[in-house]
Image: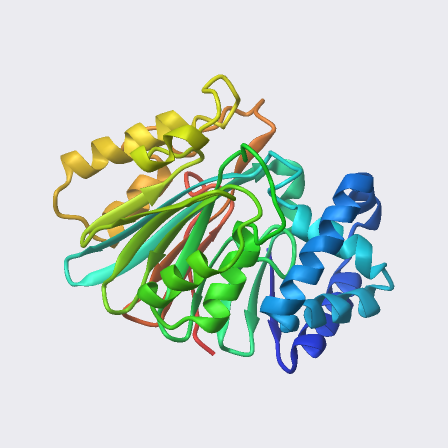
Length: 325
C-alpha cells in the first residue's frame, strides 16, 4: 500500500495524485478502459453534471487527475462514478463502537487479490484521510474533526444518477464535522447505488445507514453499530436482493458480529481487533483458492488522533499506527 499526501486546491490535488500514480505505476488505463461501455459513459457524464451542482470541487479534482494522466476526462468520470454501480466484486465488514471510555471504527476491506498492488492510503490537505482501492473516492476514512466513516458494498436493485458509497464518504469527510451533520448531508444528496455507511465521531455518536436510490434507513445506537454486504434493517426489506447471490460470506460475518456482541457486553479496541482478525468466528478466513482476500484492515479512534492500519489480512499481518503529521 502506497501512502500519499496532497496539498492545494481541488485541481492541484487531482493533478498531484495523477503525477504520483504515473510515477509509481499505479494507473492501469487498459484495466479501466476494459470496464467501460456506452451505458457507463452516459452514466458518468450524467453524474458529473449532477456533482457540478452539488460539489464542483469534485469535478475540478477529476479534471486535475485527467490532465496529469493524459487520460480522457469523460472516461475517468465513467470509471469513478460507475464504481459500485456497474461492478460487484468489493466486499467488506465495518463496526463502530463506544465503550470503555473510547470510540472506535474498524473496517476490513475485502476485494480481489489482483487489486492489492493498487490500494493506497492518502491524506488531503491534512483535513481528511483514508484508504481506497481506486483514487479520489474513499472506502473508509477519518477527518480532523474526529468523524470516521466506513462503507460496505451492497448489490444495487437499481442504479440512478448520484453518489455511490466511496464518493459519499469523500464528500462527508470533507464537509462534515460530526455524525449528525453527516447523516443530514447523506440524506440531502442524491444516491446512485446501494451501500451502507457506518459512522462514529469524537462526541461518541454512532450511526448506521442503509442507502439506496429510493430510500435511506437510519439506525442510531449509543454502544455499537455494524454493517456487512446486505441490508438487514426492516425498513429496507423491499430493496434486498435474493439470497443466492454470492456476497463473500456476508451472512456468516454478520452472525459472527452478533454473537460477539452478545458474548462481550463490554468491548474495547483489543476485542475489536480480535473480531476483525477472525478470533471470534468467521471474518477474514478466506481459503487460499478464493480470488478475494482482506486487502487491508483499519482502526480509527475518533476521540483521539489515532489510526492503526494493517496492510493485508489481519490474521497474518500486524496493525501499525499511522503518525499524525
